[in-house]
Image 1 (cartoon, rainbow over the protein chains, first blue to last red):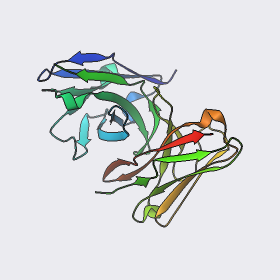
Image 2: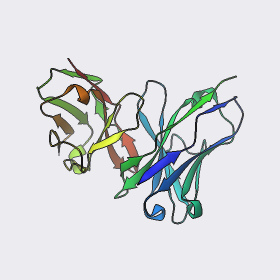
Image 3: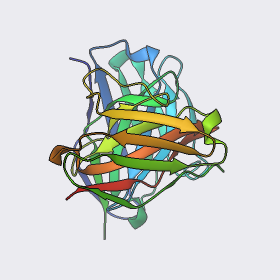
Image 4: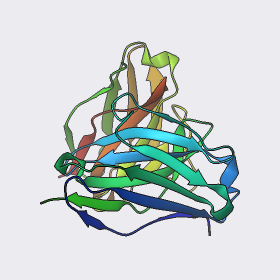
Length: 118
Length: 105
């Protein structure tokens, strides 16, 4: 089955670090960019950035550049989204998604809820 | 940066036609994609490249794009179509519209 499976929900304190994951299976992982999308509670979708799993090249939305890091390990068909110092405003659902033709998403992970609270 | 504008909400009776619009400067020159998101679920693409439908998406879902407006049309609306709908384009990076909540009366 073609799927993206994300890591489980996280509860963290402000200032802590975090890495969440997105594992692809059932397809050639290196052939498709993986993007990360944020959805804050009750709000819309926001694109954060993406990674080319074949060479780990990544780029970011200006809104998220410098705030998060996207990385990957093609040997285990997994992409990551990480924070070095979380803020309460990072509380959200985070989705990973596979891109087709570079810019639309045909496959989504189930989402990872991140809660940041003191 | 490029902005996509969607009406916050659209209401339609079952069996009628819903039109959800997405406005953007010369959006007709871009490829527009549409996603459906039901509560607690990940988005699902319903139309890509303006008017193409992925396999498994009913023919009731169609799209068009011209000038400054792209439109997602849902014919013969069913209760199960109630969801948030987002348009999306690529303009140096991925841009999403703010979303439209479709309510089936």
